[in-house]
Amino acid sequence: MNIDNLVNFLLRFIPYPRLRDIQVFAEWKNKVLILMLGAFVIIGPLAFVPGVFFAVKEGVWGLVVSNSIIYSVLLYITVSKRIRARVKVLVSILMFFLLGISVFLMIGTRGSGFNWLFIFVTLACFFYGYKGLIYSEVLAIAACILLYIPIHFNSPYTTELNVYGRLGWTVNVLIFIAVSVFFAVLLNEMLRNLNSSLKKEQKTSTLLLENKFVLEEERNSAQKSDRLKSQFLANMSHEIRTPMNALLGFANMLGDPDLPRELVDRYRNIISVSGEQLIRIIDDIIDISKIESNQMKIDLSLVDIKTTIFDLVEVSRAKVFTTNKNIRLEVDRMDELKPIRLRTDQVRFKQILTNLLDNAIKYAERGTVSLGYKIVDDGSKVEFFVRDEGPGIPPEEQKKIFDRFSQASNIEFNKGTGLGLSIVKGLLDLLGGEIWLESEFEKGSTFYFTLPIDDDIEEPEMQQSVKADLQSPLFHGKRVFIAEDDNNSFLLLERIVRLAGVQAKRANNGIELLEMLEEEIPDLILLDINMPEMNGLDALEKLREKHPELPVIVQTAYAMPEERKKCFALGCNDYIAKPIKRNALIDLLKIYLA
Image (cartoon, rainbow, N blue to C red; front, side, top):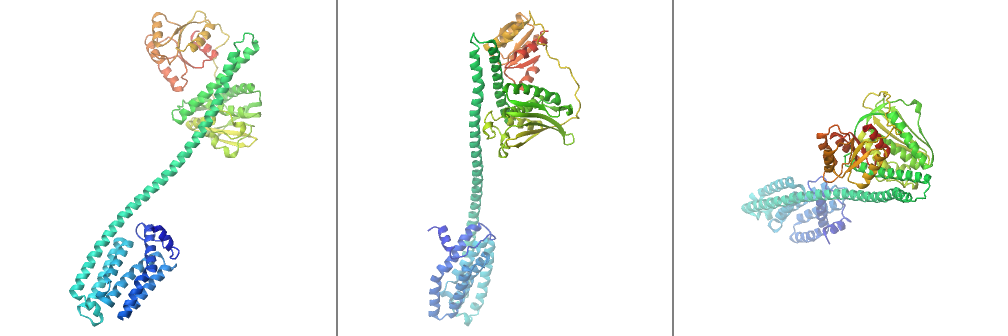
């Protein structure tokens, strides 16, 4: 039977004392006190009964009375539920002191008085530390001094005690003091070290427990993240394979020589839309990774809010037309909207609104999708909203839909990559805005977001939009160098410029481009960035040393804003990101070849 089992057994009979107010490692001392009180009740009679028989035999009735009183008191405080632990400890210790004094007075050298005093000092030190040692030693020494008086005068009332003699009593007292102090100090130091070890162990256990909870939370978070990633990869596979199926399928069908013209046009449109869908997926993945790694950079400028919204609505109306859904897209209170400018990132602002509008169109089957804005908070913010009449979002799902890879659990919502709203929230955090929603299940949702107004609101000046005329004459006789290492990309660019009447020559890398410039100066250079041997940036830096006025348009798959800035810093005239649209490239040709 171990200590804990013995303590649990004794607790059936002895009320459990609590020693929270007694110096150190109280819980461990609780167990010692339980064992001590249990010993009084169970083992005590083994000492009490023989002691009483001895006293009766010797006719020492005072010892019988004192032992009976002491044992009765110990028995009472052990089983009592009213007495506090602090009192039980103090009374139990004093009983050993009284027992030792009574033994000295009644039977002198025939008893074990010094043993009982030693137990008294030891227990006082155990439960009260050095404070208990000092008090118990002072009390024991005072008692020994008082007992020396009858010995000195050879009192007839202490015949048993007088046997010690003055010298014998003095020697025994000094030995008692030395031994009791030595063992008490040793015990106290052991207890202090034990207490320190227990505290360290407790601290370590607490840290381990806290780390266990942290690790458990991290494990649950990692498992949740893995589930979300698995779901994301499954959705991503579906989202990528769907447009890829259209791209490859209809591209093969265009090879049919008997295909009617109207089907050719329709298939080409499907291929174009599918390609744009793929680009959107790639952009979403790049954006969320840049947001999470704090690498998304914001380019602030004054943005004409009203004009931007009208442009986005027109683009979204074209998307609605391709879905064959009965959805009406409108700007809320169009005539009442005040033209204002915000200092924000125009590209990211358009991206936020486009994501919200696309979601509304994607999930709604009919009804109205409306977009609007108003000035709030005494002119310090602009509040935008996108409202739809779709299936709505359940209340328990409304917070998690802004987490990455997360979507509402409605079966109709099981489409898309689950990144759109996470990107929106991340961009708004960077722009100093907020986003929230109001949604009623099966009735629709309204997404709100705000952007701060840093400068005074002002009406934008009406500017003429300069756009290239697609019907203007083309450029026969003009020469363009195309620096491009990828064959398919070169064939596309060559076809576009030749259809415009422009002569094209190819350089496979930056070195070839510089060599060609030594022999001939073209009217324009279309420059790729990622090329072998010498990349486009190095080539651009070198050619600007000799040809500072030669127009250079960077055409590259590096579509990030920082890449664009780097190209302009090195001296390019313009920039166009892949995949390249024919009309966009023709517009640039008309600017630089006119």
